[in-house]
Image (cartoon, rainbow, N blue to C red):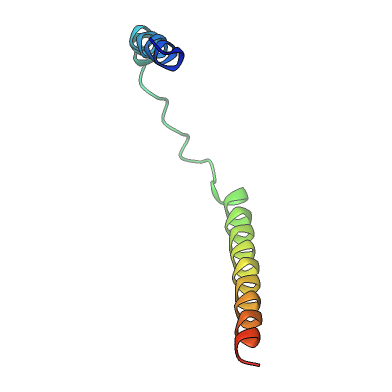
Length: 72
């Protein structure tokens, strides 16, 4: 048997044995309804939007540079 297949088989059998212990946990604790989620979420959305705008502008500049090389 190849070495990769042996390790895959061992990993698969290990997952079968440990699956019951993972599922044996109790139900999840519901979050407190008074906890605000807005604090860091707004900053993450703003950072993502800024990064997306930066990438879009860089892509447009590169595209404009290629157009100038083709059509002088």
